[in-house]
Length: 360
Image 1 (tube, rainbow, N blue to C red):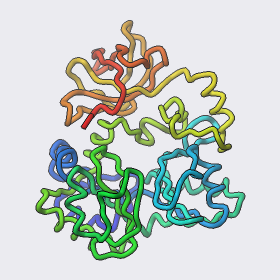
Image 2 (cartoon, rainbow, N blue to C red):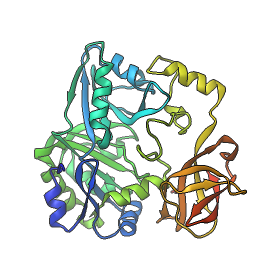
Image 3 (cartoon, helix red, strand yellow):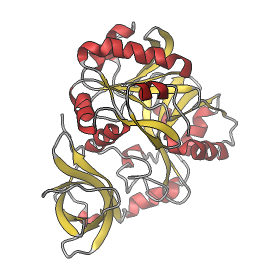
């Protein structure tokens, strides 16, 4: 089990720690619902230092990124980030990721913790253009400071105007007394805020100053359990649940990051799939009666025939109702369609809705 640079801090403040993607991670501190509400209404801090970071540099860096990712990284300018995914040769997804253009001929790829080794091997295997690759995952930490009060609470810690950083833009600037920190207006919660990338040796100072600055705003540490309920209320995909090696980006509703204006791994097959249409789709649903849908619960039609499985599900803290996502045949994918979630042998009715479930 790996620790993050802040594991000892989480343990000291009483976090419940669990193994996650090979790391010892805080799953909760005072409870999922309380932590969820803090992020929706105030400001909370996640340690997500388990995420992977690769630097891709040199004159051929963009060529390599364009080859392995579906989105068009050529549209990026310095200071902008982009959500993308890496398709495999068989129609599925190697991983989803965020691509940052740090400077001309240098990009930062942020990948899922459970896929670091797999992604590194995959990108390396396609690096026929001699791009410089550096895996800096073990040297860098990542804090997600999320919530509607994040900008106001964190402004005293930096000389730049945080409110001026647009969604999916970033600055490399001073933060909490440390120079050259990436301050990125990205996040996985739908409630605004920042992600802060810094060296392991710097992150504890940043953590302490973040909590000092946020004290007047009721800032709290937030665990991975609330991260999951927050992202699910937004309908954001989680790798390993909603997308994986067997799900195509088009089935997963990621057509918006799949750009056929360029060639990439398996692009011809995915283009054909787009033209012919998919046979199943990832949908969001809300239960219309009481119940909590969970990962891997079966989805049935009105006759009780199994038509799919729940990929993510929970009792949504902001909505007080059961919500989830899952793959169903396209004939059941239209908004308003009735489906049934099999919960302990009972088929609980649900309706297909278009995410996000939580609307500000």
